[in-house]
Image 1 (cartoon, rainbow, N blue to C red):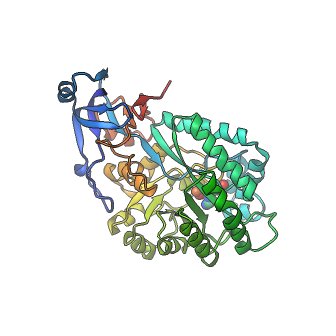
Image 2: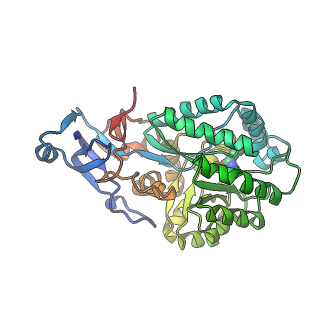
Image 3: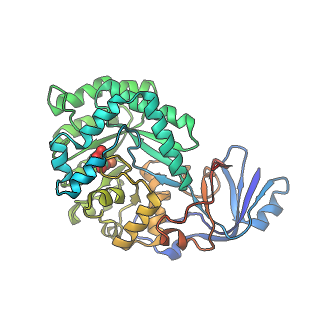
Length: 410
Ligand code: NIG
Ligand code: FE
């Protein structure tokens, strides 16, 4: 047993409703707090530091000096950090007036990353993921979802997912893999969208289960990608085989979020094009609405209507969408602070979106909060006020990060 503290403030993210708008007054902020951690790296108790020291006389003490704020380890529930190459040219092309979709139609976009990712070895991909995951760890992010989707053949998708599995062993970061074989129809596939998905279903899905490579299935529902008619049977098969479903939905046009709800997806992500109709549908479902401000900043388009979603009663999570094309920046805390400015989100809504509600988007029930039974994952900031963290838009970075009770930086 060990005790870490004292913290000037500790944000437990306990006892908050899973859905709908939140006020900062609802936050459970413990002053002079300590975290008592057991040998398994789980939280035994969170409470007054002096009381914990008294109650656990045999515990080892990791005493902190100065003002410290502890928050749960952040969760990035949507990334594409397994990729080869760069898309710096897309940035220049977009700023010269070409749209994301124009670039894709002309052979750039996702396809250009597919070409570059196929050229990379599995080991090179693994190293790239480890480097990016460690960068995120230093920002206080302790769980990162990682998608495939730049392989787009059975073997190349397997290479990506095996790289993610291997990377997970080489970093303290908790990586959660998702199969995004339905990202776009690869230009070298001779057949229809339906035939491509059928091939993945028959030849890729069983290997994912056999090798324990992913438990989540994603698809990009959009004009240039896959439509409702082909994704519904694909998702149905995935569900039957035990995969959770998540969707790239309503990024440029609507339709995806309705599919997500119909199929019972755990989350619908993007939603920049969602209208009040989709907002209401999401609010009345168990599907988490995930805002991706990194894609908005990358493409210069609208923000996900997070305010409207929360007011309607939806569960809103915020993720970075770190990818080489539309969201190359990857700093979740900075992006969450920026969407807060544009969408008028309270601190409680922002922190829930990158902790407890993000955990729900991944259907992970042992992370995203600081209380008994949760993994002892937390980030420590050298400040006396948690509000400084979002106010500084990501400039204030953690002085220490703990994963399963161990300090992991340097
Ligand atoms: O979430 N929208 C589709 N997929 C990614 C972008 C992938 C890429 O451009 O490489 C996204 O924005
Ligand atoms: Fe994405």
